Figure 1 (cartoon, rainbow, N blue to C red):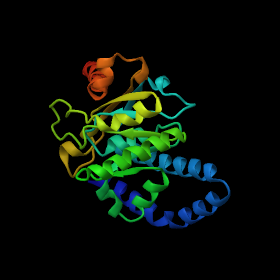
Figure 2: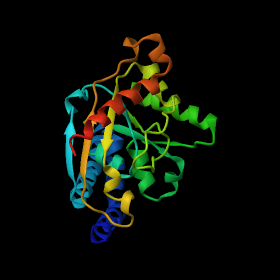
Figure 3: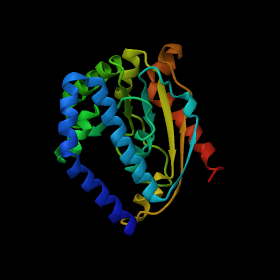
Length: 245
């Protein structure tokens, strides 16, 4: 329980104390928008790295050399824990927006930081708004901002079960921009918190980045079911993690 209390206090304290930081960042953005964006990215990455440190978890990272440093990408990962976001965002080499459920917009200050960091909010019940979100993601990738999506649509709460089917719509961001898809296989993050709520406990975490997937290089059939193709690539990596734990 002590780890949970410390992490909650850290997050709440940061959000409150970040009010003047947001004001300074706003002023910087008036003259140097890119410098403001990088500053915001590094600030949140520092906080996320600190959170992961406080969990006491051991993180093994594989294949990070597959992530391009000079262009925007579409990150696609499996999703079992809130810590998937903390873990992966802390390692993004450049500006990256995450797709989040629209209920996150109701959280003061947190939603402000998310919008500052180019996150997009998805209303799963509104198809029209969903299309607008995809178009905005396409626009951001074309502007050099990577996007990250967990296309199962929600956290998979079955620790032993297979991944939920990937929703194909979000892959339009890669289809329409030609950006590489970076598959991410994440193992054991639910062991930090979700598997034994309310305790936060150290876990052995594996984060593996697969080789980039370029839509234009795929067969017609694989292009048609791009979500399923990417999911198979992630599952192959997850299967290999079982021998590493």
